[in-house]
Length: 135
Image (tube, rainbow, N blue to C red; front, side, top):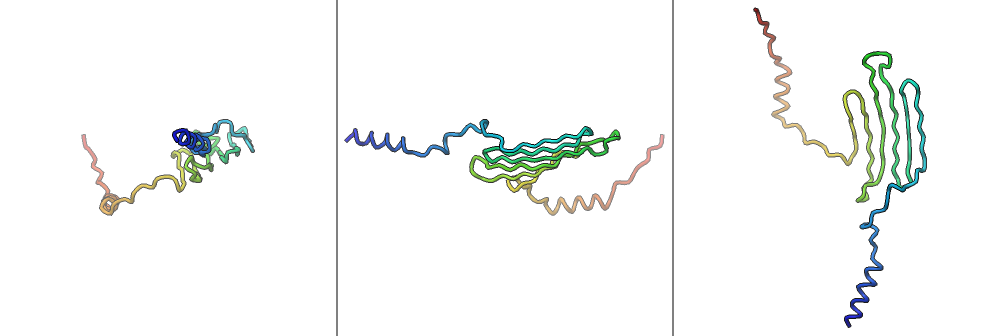
């Protein structure tokens, strides 16, 4: 009897689907498509796709290239499937004001309370007087 129980457990373990537990080596995913182009003035664009479903593309543009205020603006997208099976789609813009991502998987801040909105409006409507100091 013990032998049958041990045999049943051994067969169950051997037949179990553990693919969700054992992670595959994603570093070995093949590159399906890869494009890259760069201009001498700094503009660029790239796109790639891997065999495990990662797709990314971006385009960078130098704004005000001939001035002291030159800045790089990059717009791009990334799509992949999260380990839990959730499809992720991210769009972003990175420029002189920072990195601005958007995507349905990103957390959303709570709304600003009404009292704070009223206080900000009051402050905007009633600027502090400028006091000139005499010496």
